[in-house]
Length: 164
Picture 1 (tube, helix red, strand yellow):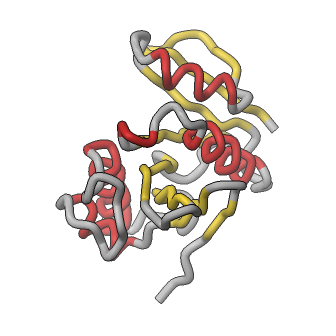
Picture 2 (tube, one colour; picture 1 turned 45 degrees about the vertical axis):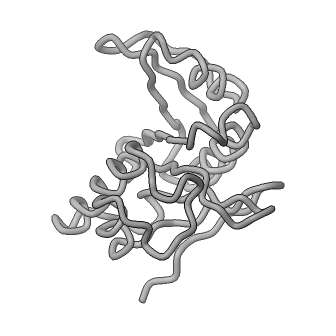
């Protein structure tokens, strides 16, 4: 079994989701993890489905998938974060999902800054991209606090980037 990557912040552990776990999570099961609210949220289930699909197609690269955000104080998973695929042309896209009860505490900002910096430490990555809808002001603030800068909109989405 492949060893999952783990990145620690002051309050969180970002632990890579393995393909076998992704199969469970995409169905709404816990994959043996303790989730705030009892089960993964919709965004985390979707991300797990992307990872499972990439693995089945032979396109998954370890490290460039989904991570769970495990809160250090109680071991609960408060959300998911991850890449939409491996780097391409020096760029990688990242997304995140946080349980509503965990929002407003800085967890997403802390995790985003950590995972984006991890990506930028890769010699093949010079830009981390994140997008959101214009009405999702909380996600926009997370990206800004994590050091991302606004770029021109694309297909109705606000685009943010962090460069290394």
